[in-house]
Image (cartoon, rainbow, N blue to C red; front, side, top):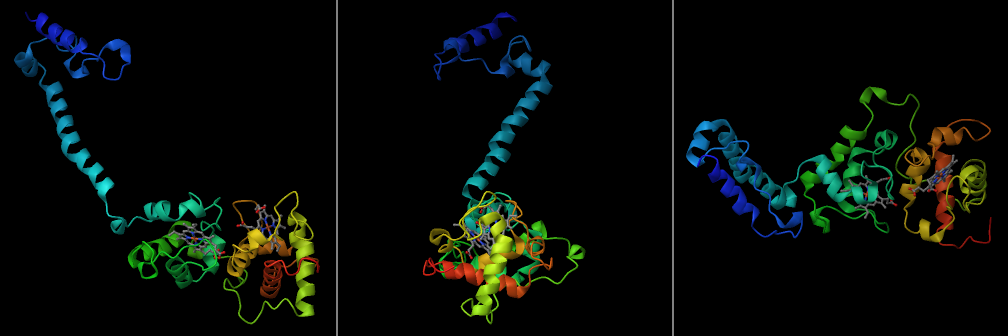
Length: 288
Ligand code: HEC
Ligand code: HEC
């Protein structure tokens, strides 16, 4: 009798029709009841194999209580309660700015030079209000977005603490301004336009084609579809930081392509950005 009872149990389970339609029409008996591992009738089984059954019990309890609750928590966590930088970034930003804050279609945020030049309150402002005329949405609730002010703070400070350079690793040379200066950028005065065209041809032209038509190294810049979706601010930032994730060098190596061999100045950066801006609406198509 000792050897038949478990066998019968096993048989009757095996005779059940398959639920999945696979596995040769048999449902495998659960491992814990395997007759070969513990060939005893129920009461004796439990008494003789206390460790195994205790373990089984603990696992069952764990799956009913601990695990189940954690799953439920994950499923029902209210979006406003998420306070983890990584989770907030993955859920709200990664789709455009890339999984690790780079290699996305939008400018990379995982970039120490970018984080060194953008003022902290500017990050908060952009994330809260978005950038009108571009794909960057407003996230603050006051602006119709989905994030609380606290979550925006977590994101803004998290960008720096996760991806910024250590404070003592600041670059030794003066940094260009992040914000587009309001008193520069008039590319229509002859002097500015000439400098801009020169810088463009000698620097940008190496990769984007002399007239911005696109080259072997990089795509076209003189394209209304592209320019109409990107702000002057983002253009300025890209001329300063490059796209390290895509192989575009920053203003230091770009400036080294000019005869003077110096990093691009604030003025040169503003002039090139204004030139790109003037190509935005296609008015300048036939002028150089
Ligand atoms: C639908 C796409 C999209 C999403 C989602 C998005 N962004 Fe952006 N973001 C952009 C684009 C595009 C730009 C550049 C806009 C421009 O031309 O100025 C930008 C710009 C920025 C900038 C300024 C960068 C610079 O180069 O000056 C910051 C900071 C920023 N986003 C943070 C975030 C954060 C944080 C999130 C998530 C809460 C987020 N973004 C979600 C598309 C997006
Ligand atoms: C050494 C090559 C190189 C030089 C020089 C260069 N770029 Fe780029 N640039 C790239 C690459 C590579 C990319 C990414 C691929 C692409 O967009 O074609 C890029 C992308 C860009 C983008 C698009 C960025 C984005 O997020 O979509 C802009 C705008 C840009 N460059 C502007 C400029 C300007 C303005 C200059 C001159 C001041 C310049 N580049 C000089 C290689 C270069």
